Image 1 (tube, rainbow, N blue to C red):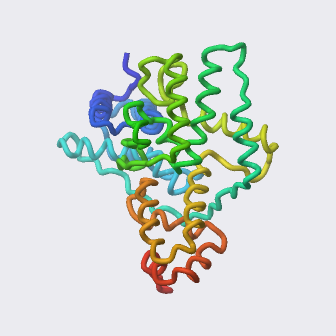
Image 2: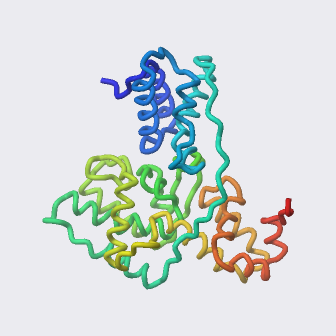
Image 3: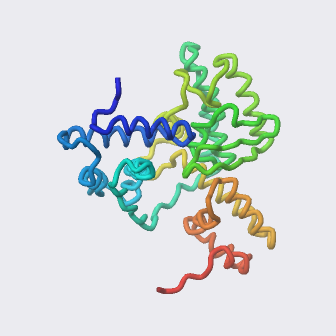
Length: 323
């Protein structure tokens, strides 16, 4: 029985099958939003026998509780769906206008070395509940999953969706095929991380033979965003105490990775630009401008880099006029 109820549910199902076949379907994000859109149309416009501009505009309108970015994230799948239909001459409906993202005011949490030590100690100290299989899998996974984020700067979603056959343990290279924007890129692991991944792979293979995902849940699928968030927060609070104000999130490891690398290159002179390019590619950024964003969120780092690598810094971040 179909989970969709609108008059154009068959087109939605065809669209999803097409995206899955092309390896560009994100169920955790796209799946829920297109289902909500389908139910919205079925509940509010039951008389409409086909997709209309009115229903699209009504669903995609920015809500009072949304930022431009969150609205864009919610409606992105509808934009892709409509373009799919238009390419096949199946609709004349126009996709929603892409809202311009607001300037970010977010300043990432600054990890302290002792905090990180306590956090990873908590990861290593997990005791499986009654020695149950699911609990043992959780212990093994948490020890390695968060260290992978910390040591490579991978996005949490990249680690969650990582397939087993995309990890070359012999060479220590990860082939990331599904990511933000679906840009493929490669991550080279440090030898210590590679060895840890090998140990994990051998241990987990006894519990989950022939698994599809490198980090696979007890149910045989990839871990959810909520699983990562909840486990991180619980272990962080256990290690460093609860905070009602500012606290890190799993994505903070990515910021930390970029900042630590950039900080270590300040005295590298002419080699700085080359290393910056490598960092940008490894982190899966489409352009070096995306990586350069980390300059603006690290207090005093931009000034330090400008003093020590003036010419290279200006080449990456050209001066912007007052206009």
